[in-house]
Amino acid sequence: MTARSTMLISGFSFARNADKLEYPVVESIRSILPVCDEFVITVGRGDDGDTTRSLVASIGDPKIRILDTEWTALEQLRSRIYSQQTNIALGECRGMWCFYLQADEIVHEQYLASIREACGYFADRREVDGFLFRYKHFWGDYDHYLVNHRWYPREIRIVRNGRGIVSVGDAQSFRYGDGKKVPVVALDAEIFHYGHVRDPHRVHIRKKAAARIYRGDLLSGGPCAAPPPFDYGSLEKLPYYRGTYPAVMRERIAAMDWRDLLQYRGKSRVALRHDRLKYRFLTLVEQKIFRGSGREFWGYKPYRVLRGLSRRYARMRKGLPGAAASGGSPGGAGTAPAAALIIAVYDRPDFLEKVFCSLKNQTATDFEIIIADDGSGPSIAELVERYQGTFRRPVKHVRHDDDGFRKTIIVNRAVVAAEAPYCIFIDGDCLLHHRFIEFHLKRKRRGSVLSGRRVMMNAEVSVKVSLEDVAARRIEKRGYWWGKCNKAGYRHGFFIPGMFHLKNIVKRKTHDILGSNFSVYKDDFLLINGYDERIVGRGMEDDNLSIRFSMAGIPVKTVCHEALQYHLYHTSVPMRFSDEFSNRFRNNPEAARTPFGIVRERREG
Image (cartoon, rainbow, N blue to C red; front, side, top):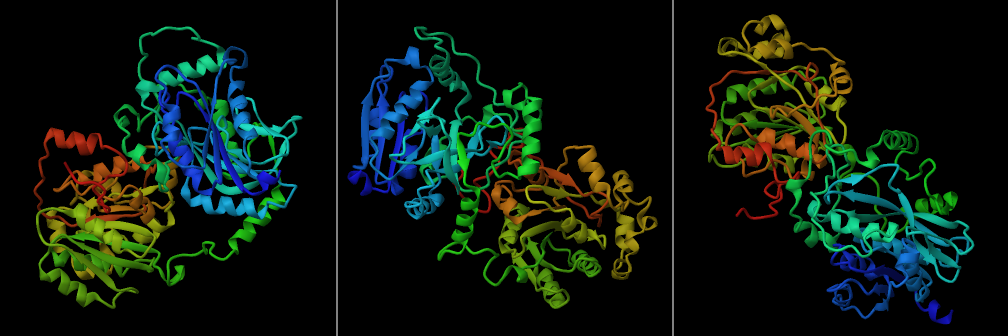
């Protein structure tokens, strides 16, 4: 016990055939090594050519101790071989607290300081014998994860040494040796579980290994034909991970090369067990009642959460020096506008002045205006200067030189300049209904995009629209443009509050983005890195954006009939794209987040 008292935290784990089964064992160890005073790992002798031991040794940290073991009792122990190997490592730990990770589990570096702090704080609180962590079970790729009753939302990963606590079952959790539950404090920290992120062509290797362990299958089985790629089902409705990747995993994540084998849209082609009706129903009820706290009905819980102590500790941590303060950016959240109205323009100051006139009619007035100027002449700057002081906030003018249609680039720059948390995008040839901004703000939700439609007025009526007509809201009367617009305009020109619920909740139809009438939280726009700036030319940028939002699990909802626009006619020359270019950017984008957006993460070619 004297030896143990000199160390606060011992990390421990087990591994075998980690390279063959593609477990990120090195990344797992490295993720918690900074907070551990030692790390003990049992490495079982694997199949011929197994390099697990050399992988662990390659970390080169003197804190790591490797215990070589033989899995000779595999036929008798089956899945209990995992807990046997875990307990061997646990028995060699010398720290007061023992931090356990399986070879496919990672801890983000943002949690390390708070974890070590908790171990120190509760060192003398003998009623606490463990710490509970939340789980993110990634599925298919490194961007989507499962929230489902079949997948445990929380588990014990730190236990107090010398209290008779042992790993049980298949080493998912811990209990006292007599079977009693462990009293734990719930920490504000997560385990990232990557056990189900593999190339679909190689999933069968892990499945065969699991069958051998759990059922004794294929104990002497020879080589056989590889099965077809594993189908992860549709990822469209799975939650999308919006945070940063753990630093230790970034190289592995960058090397992922099976996105084209995954299904990001549409209905699943296969029936997966966690998609069964009973699990989906229980998940829905748990999320509604427990609000993502990790509590569940009839779940496997070998622990007893000390709820009062957990709450008091969480409240105390918020008041500690150095803890993140709540609130917004410097200057106070109250000083930021409710919305940023980003107006994409190229010349036509006469159109933009009419747009300004329609903005003076808005019922919602707390917005900033950012002009995204795609290389106009001096007339736009002069107009912006003339309208300074007209609105509650100064009008910002973001411009680059004229080099063709480069809306993707200038709009991205305008988003960066926005102070508001929410962005509304329009074009400089679209006049707004007086409640346009009101309804975009009223229907906004994090994790979703709003998109409306517009009345496409013809040349005859567009020419006669005056500033007085806009100020008096005559354009909002159907008789003003009826018979002088495209066919869809007859439908889109009706202002019907409440249609949002009918079109999005009852019909549940998939909608697309219209670049002159959509809105989204700035954080969600930054999540996918904005527009793909490789798209130069008119006509494809919005389709690409729609698909990438969908891949990110951010649905597009319609505000048609609530956020109305009236488009002024002008001639435009459509750009022709090659079939290869269209397939690459419109039909099959590489990923939700483009590396060629607001942040240039890669060089083309």
